[in-house]
Image 1: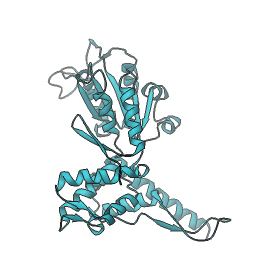
Image 2 (image 1 turned 30 degrees about the vertical axis):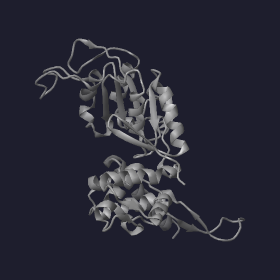
Image 3 (image 1 turned 180 degrees about the vertical axis):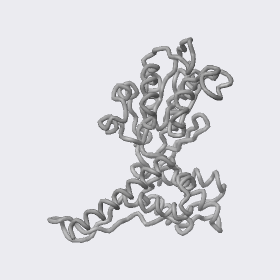
Image 4 (image 1 turned 45 degrees about the vertical axis):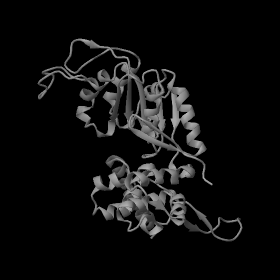
Length: 331
């Protein structure tokens, strides 16, 4: 018998919690929410970082104050500063009137900076000063602006690695990460998969259900796109299924088990493992084929950003080039 799922809605976004890992995370989030600490939320794309951020605001003393969420990856480099910190009339071509920045709009409340690793060096420097409570100027302004904002940030990147590469400021990282919360990927909280799938299915097709075989397949798949991929997969299955029961064939999931020989010195017999990187690569390439190479549609189906998809495709191409070079070097 499956444990009862806990369903909560924060600022219009619903979280379905069944696994002990997520129950523990939600308990920690409620405790952290009662403080003024800056929080950085870590986790893979699509794992549910934003719902944790919204829960932090919901349980905080600022719950009745403004909530502003920003996808840093979606801001063009030349507009980052003006969007975050605002500008005055005539500051640049097209600035026909003054505009408040997102930090001003969030004042007394919470601002959530998703994909914080995408900010350029100039924006990082100004953000650090704001976090330290230093008043700042709008672009083209002569009057300093002071804001009282709690900052929550999130990333699916390794910021410590980026610091070593000179791509992210170490002082900003330490200022943002007064508290760190990690959202486990879906494959690490298998108990959440079927309740989440059932929630998405009920929204799309009330009265439909999964067969026992479909539930097992959902739990055995690696979900490289995490909750976003699960949602998209379930919604497609609900649309195209011919009956009220969703079976394995309706889900259209690739096999997630990879058979490998034992390592030297280990017992004989073959083992089944979740080769997650290979699953992810195959899934991405399969979805790209389904969308005829259209990266935006593929990213939407996978539940990741176009930038993340581009980075992964570049890494696959680099890996293929290294293999080619290695093979020819041996000739």
